[in-house]
Image (cartoon, rainbow, N blue to C red; front, side, top):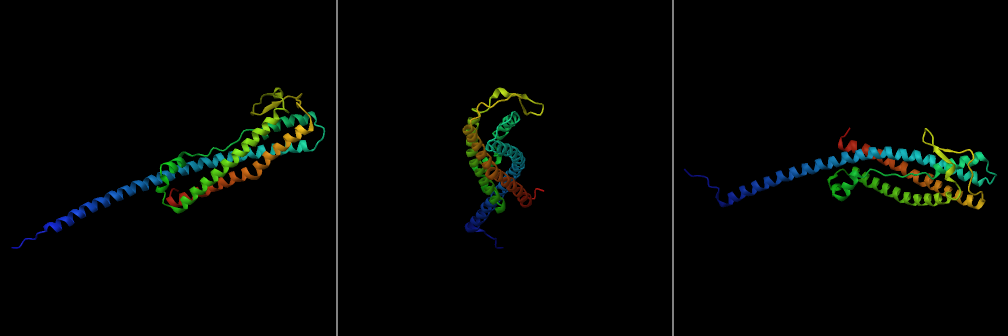
Length: 237
């Protein structure tokens, strides 16, 4: 009876198939690991977006108060009338609010990983990739405007030191607001000094209201939209 002999060629084919199958298995495993890592990045990024929406909403509220106070200062000074004791107290209070601290620090926990660790290559959904890149662009625009705005705010604050005397600010009240003493006086009533201060405050207010706040609102809208896209593309909800 004849016996089937595979021969050297057939043995080579079997070895090739074994190696090839092993390669496919390893490739599929690696692909699954990267897919799982990509999804973990996305879930983490979505958590960051949720935090950002709260941060942005709070900042928008603070800027609205700052802008309103800045508008009040500018209008009171521009009227050019005699400033009454009650007007002085209001100016002291508006000064605290109009030039008070502000700033947006968006959550960059996952963004840093995506940028530096090559994580973006693990994101395979085009809509999500486009949304992330657009969101980063919005964050960069906010940072640029904020740098300018903070510089202008500090320049205005420097001028305020020649007008408002800190000794008339009493301790904070129960709600956290500073109490202005009834006998508060301005360090100068020279119109040029007051007008320059009012102009600077108005400039800060205009940039806050006309550019910075709309950027924050737009960034919040981007975050809301991107979260919805992520939920749909990755079936997170």
